[in-house]
Amino acid sequence: MKLARYTIDGHTTIGAVVNDRVIEIATLAPAAPKTIRELLALGPAGRARIAHALETDPKGTPLARVKLEAPIPDAQKYMAIGMNYHDHAEESRKAGVPVPKNQLWFNKQVSCITGPYDPIYKPRVSEKMDYEAEMGVVIGKRCRYVKAEDARSVVGGYFVANDVTARDWQFKSPTFTLGKSFDSHGPIGPWITTDDEITDPHALDMKLWVNGEQRQHASTGGMIYNIWQQIEELSQVMTLEPGDLIATGTCANVGIALGKFLQPGDVVRVEIEKLGHIENRVEAEPSPRAS
Image (cartoon, rainbow, N blue to C red):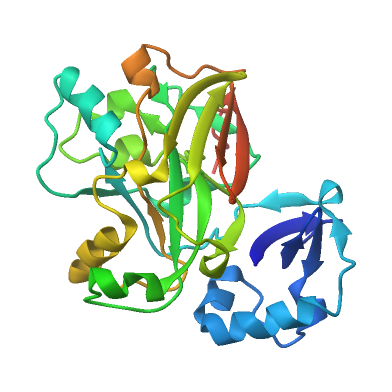
């Protein structure tokens, strides 16, 4: 099932995407939760009831009529792992950046989350705005101390992400958080594809284009630490909650390696097999509003 959050005629709601249409969850199950985060918390049985109801209502609204929003705008956590693809780690090593011996984690502040087709803003204080195609994972079950062999049981689904990064801010601090957390630098979507639809999340084709020029291309099998190992590591430290987001790393040919940083007017598209695509135009950061 593909779970989307969308706006139509000024009303924002959640629905299930079937082919080129979206069917509002409230019309299928009026008592169902109103957010995808709460819907994931129902677990597989709750999602199965909604999937069964879908079989009775094939109509819905054409996707072309709606605006897709960030599927989970209210995540409590957005964790991301650095240098987790073999080819990206190698290009970093060649650039003089030490390859970590353990999983390297940072958080993207949740205020960076934005929609799959919304603008991403070039900060007025950064000259090195970069892209990173990533597959995202959303937690579907409250958990702690999860073993890698059990980790798939706590996954709610997957999404497409761009871990937009201000490199000059990333490297001026011992932690990556500031460089990873500018407003609008967390586009996600276009929806959440539930885990039952994906046979192997480590065998998906991932690509990124800037202005139609392909910059990144890899299989999600190129991870150094797979998704299950990532969940095991994180859950040793913190309780993971339904709706928590994890960005699982990017592959080679990021902008800093190519000497090509994003500028206003650029259009960045990230596509992952079976998960869909997101596409965001870079715009100059708007002037701050007076408080």
